[in-house]
Image 1 (cartoon, helix red, strand yellow):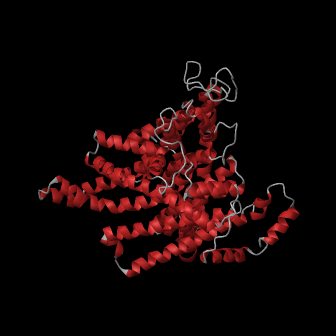
Image 2 (image 1 turned 30 degrees about the vertical axis):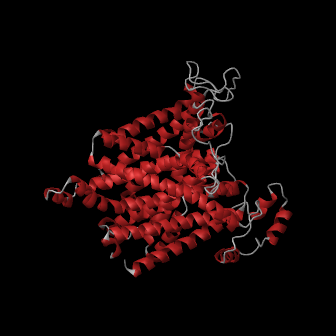
Image 3 (image 1 turned 180 degrees about the vertical axis):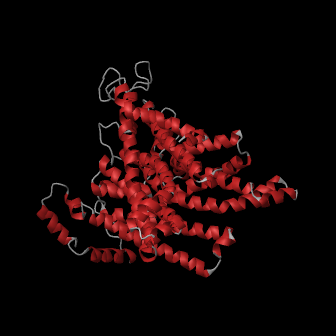
Length: 272
Length: 316
């Protein structure tokens, strides 16, 4: 951790993530207004001392809504990524450890799934499942699974033939023991790096789904949904678009920068 | 280029497409909400759904349904759109070229801007230009298309300025000027994100190449810096860059869906959203297949370009 903070991009990433993290934990308490409170006297206002980021079409305080929405938006990214990483890692490890026939069948399917763009894949699944933030999260996780499986497999392949794995096998350890105690701890680096960077994609995909009306539903304070609702009023109050847009960008950038720093530390060869 | 390499790559691509077709079919058939439910709506009784399902052949085993579907797709019969009551092939054909125009314009812009930016950053490592390109790259990859698109609309299409139309489409046959005018903002949106990504890749490949022994040898020979960078550097840095660009085509195809929706550009992406909202299964299946095929073909083309640039690949 200390090394990440000494890394220039890692430090910037960590700072951004701390700010976002504070909003997630403290958001509803530090918000100056109730995020759902209508105020017909103060509609579509620009920034002012009373409303730092202005107000929306119902006079709701944009800053309060952003702080409130941090939770849904960030937890969506974390949840979808975790699900995708677990599913992908399980499949990739099975492929990497089983070898030959099972491996090639699994990897051909993975290749096929990778040929469908993430957003399209996610849209397909979420539509069939019926929309809503929960299903959107599952859909993003499913879309991430093939990519994670590929990375997990190659990480497993790189340690599978190493002496300590063969030694464990020779000792007669069970299959599960070899995977959990010998293979996984040594293959986990690339998975963590990829997962960190994927969180930013998950946040952006989730926001996109909400924007398209397939994720969070009104009156949720999801950042993507805030922008979708702002579109009608964007020329009258650009802040309604800009504020959540910047929030999404900062969150995504935080995870990106942090993930890049982790990558450099796990794999010194990629340091440039 | 060897014929064997080409053949192997072609077969791999066909295999990928076969898997995609099974997957698309599986998603639209196995998941809850099959075609009968979608046609009848959520208030239909189970009996109605079962009856229509039988009529549509949904009670057959899924592999029989798949073979029937893929068989007619291969024969050019893509079915009829449930909502538009038009042949799917016709609907998709028109939308395809509009999307292609958008995608090609974005890719051209990206290549013209991103590669020089990346080279510049690599040549001025650690200097201001490098930091600017790096910062832009991080920012660009962290802003989703729908945010960029909406912000561009706010700043460049505000009604009081009227610089660009806020959306829509004019066919080039009708007015080339109108067509280009509508093309600008969606192209900019798509290009911004891809430029961020690709310039960063070109920079890192180019940095590696410029630090290599053969570049030092070329410099020691006394070659002018321009020749060193262009002839010896860029060519070797291009193969990985082409690989990244082709991967980004996948990203571009996803981005097109959002961008077309925001700018009301009547291409495949908008058609897809329309089909998803109206649960128009034949259109959903066909658009997904077409987009996956485009992606698979672009991967194939990039493999061939890389093989042409780097002799080590084609004999591996």
